[in-house]
Image (cartoon, rainbow, N blue to C red; front, side, top):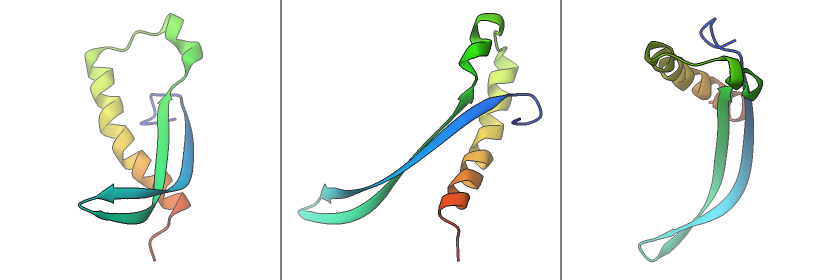
Length: 74
């Protein structure tokens, strides 16, 4: 549960890549993550403007927390 109001699912993916720019190339780790409400609830749930705002305010710290599980700070 996110913010005690939203049932969510999430996934995360890490992959390596190269970032090109300004004539140079850097090796990077790209971390993608997705956190959303359940598709099964879509037919019966319409989120109000206030609920959408609450979701986005709650999701940022949660995304940081998930990132920390995969890449903890020393």
